[in-house]
Amino acid sequence: MLDLLDYLKNIKINMNALETTLYVLCGGFFGVFSRWMQNMLAFDENGLPESSFWNIAVPLVCVAAAYLYHRMIKGLHSRRFTHEEGFTSVFSNTGRLFAIARYAIGALMVIGAALLFASSEVDKNSLWLRILSVLCVLAGVSYSLFLREANLETPAVKKLCLYTLCPIVAFGFWLVTTYKINAYNSVTWSFGYEIIAVCFIIIALYRIAGYPYGKPDFNRTLFFVMLGGFFSVAVLADERDLGMSVMFLATAGYFLDLTWIMVHNMHQKAALNEPITLEQSNGLDAHGFEHLNR
Image 1 (cartoon, rainbow, N blue to C red):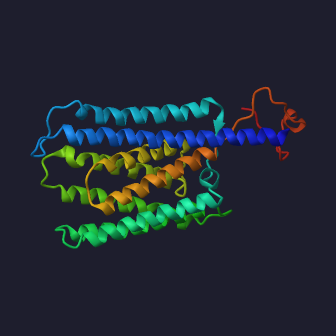
Image 2: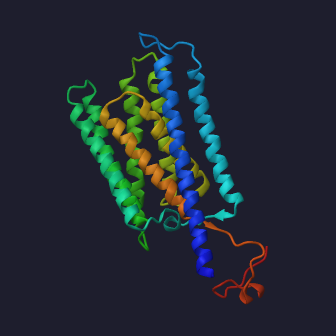
Image 3: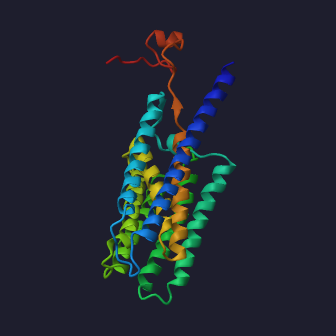
């Protein structure tokens, strides 16, 4: 009977992980649609912005997505789902499917970086783009190694710090490169959405880095991972170098994978009417240590 209850609880947790991940993905699709409509209807033949409903709809979709993800995280806690703050407890991803996912995501990031490096030869900003390509190769490798390290009993903290730092540096340089390329572009809407997306990606990566650097915060990390996934998908509506689009796609896959992993690793608190053990009734925990009532 207890095995059946554990099985049903696992099904519930897996459904929560699937539901949360699909909300991030579908939210990104709404972002793609609204941005695509803005690109089609809110600019004239010369690329200058015109007054259009879609200039309001795009930021509204972003705000709605942020509110929805915040409510979803609160909803998980209201249904008595909780989490551990330990790195391996939050990011553990054992199993063949998780292994395939993490290496496929890393490989896709490396492929995107290689495409960008190859296509930047004739670009006037070729030096900036090539440096970005190299940094994104390191970021792609770090994606896979970070998730692999989470399955070890004693992860190497210094390696984890390096694995979380590489993507932050890569997207920080991406932000600077976007400013550099669009320095003389007076139409902010044409590149501003990408800058906002990269900023939220950096915040999400910063929150993930809080675990190896000793500043874990599950709720904020999950929220910004979900929002980073949303923007990584939504920004695909814009026209850009194919390699950069592939790297955004890989980053979206990384955040979607992390969303699934983090929710999947949550567990449900015991019900209030669950019978307590003799040790608990005597003020002891499962290991025989006395609880201190506060």
